[in-house]
Every structure is written in C-alpha cells, then in structure tokens.
Amino acid sequence: MSAKIVVGLDGHVSGGRALAYAEQMAGLLKEPELIVTYVVEWSPYSFQTAQENAERHKRREEEIATAMERVIDPAVAELKAKGINASGVVRHGDVAETLNKIAIEENANQIIVARSSEGGFAKRLFGSSTSNLVMSASVPVTVVA
Image (cartoon, rainbow, N blue to C red; front, top):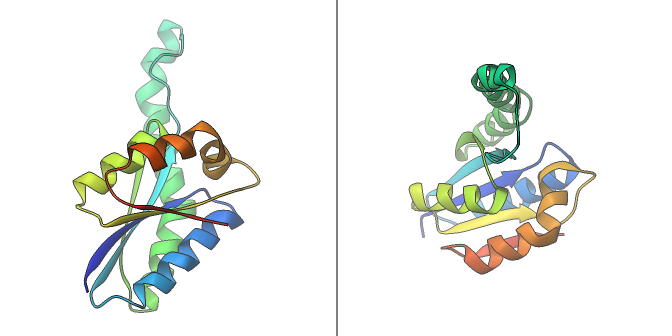
C-alpha cells in the first residue's frame, strides 16, 4: 500500500524518535513518501515596533533557511540514502494547524510526531497543541513516546 506520512521534527532527540518510527512505517508500505516537517511557531498577534515589522520578513526567511539547513536537509538526506522517498518543508505558524494544513495539502495519510522533548516543537505539542492536533487533524495522528 502506498502512503504519504507527515513527520514533525523539533531538532531534538524526540524528533529523531518520530523520524525513526516513520522510517519503520515506511518499510511496511509499498510506495511510501515521508514529508519531513519543521514548524517555527509564529504569532501574528504579537505587538511589534515599526522597525520590527520592517525586519519581520527577513527574520522569517532566515529562520526557515536555518531550520532547513540544520534539521530538515540532514533528515531528508539520511532517508534518501536509505532509499526512502522523502521531502522536507519548513513553515511558520501554529504547530497543530500548520501540520494539519501540510497533511491536507500533501494528501497525506498520517501525521507522526514525538510526545516529549527537551524543548521546541514537541514540548509545545505535549500541551494543548497535542490535543488540538489529535482532535482536529484531518488524518490519523501517531504520537511517539
């Protein structure tokens, strides 16, 4: 059976556990595709000065480039070296909403995330974001310990 799986990474060991589980699941599928994802939490509601607003786009692009270089690109390269079809994406936004949007856009069959972390994505996800993702996702969500 072929399937697309969105994998949420956080740049920590816990993200590695989610990726390892996704890799294991890919081994069970006929034509798997893993969409390795990193969400930079971004609030459109924070108050900023005029100067901060002028620099916002530049900072956003820098954050995306850094996450791609440090987290996504190495993970995708490792998967491809193992013969797994993989691609990567970095977005700004609410973690739960953004992962679900990516799953919808990619016509994914499942989302895999880690349960806990030293910080970052999974730490945020462990609270209300986990509940929001699990309760509102358009596809099944697997939360890896």
